[in-house]
Image (cartoon, rainbow, N blue to C red; front, side, top):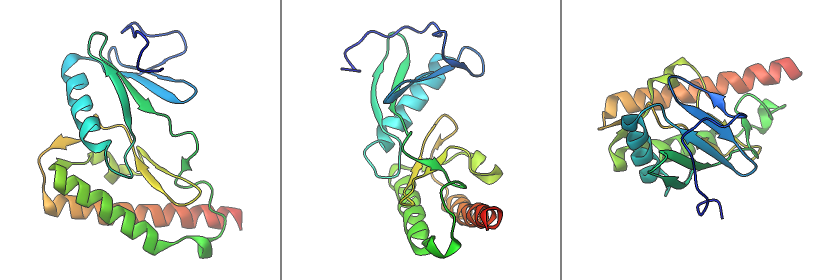
Length: 173
């Protein structure tokens, strides 16, 4: 299985280079991720381990501490949030709000603050054709919880997703 094989920290030829020594390799059913240093590896492994047990979060399938490689679920059956919706009428705002509430309740339970990237757009969020939201790439999440900040992020994400769906609908009309 995928967790039985040996991993290597050397960047494979087909891997996407990221900052520093970090790389990501997208395979058939999983994503291999090698953070740029030991601190980032430990941090992302910890956050991914804690969030993997909840709906709406990308699953950590396994990891290799020797090579510092994380093996994550591949989200290839899901589209970016602005794709896949051709009719605003078909978009379920209530379902979107319920999922965001569930996601941010998970942050409260786990005492995690999500990335500031969410204020800049739809980074690291996938939405499937059934309007199922999945969060991924936890390197910028932090330990600790701030209710006011998290509520602001949740409300902002709701507005950003609605604007993206509306923009997609307008361009397809």
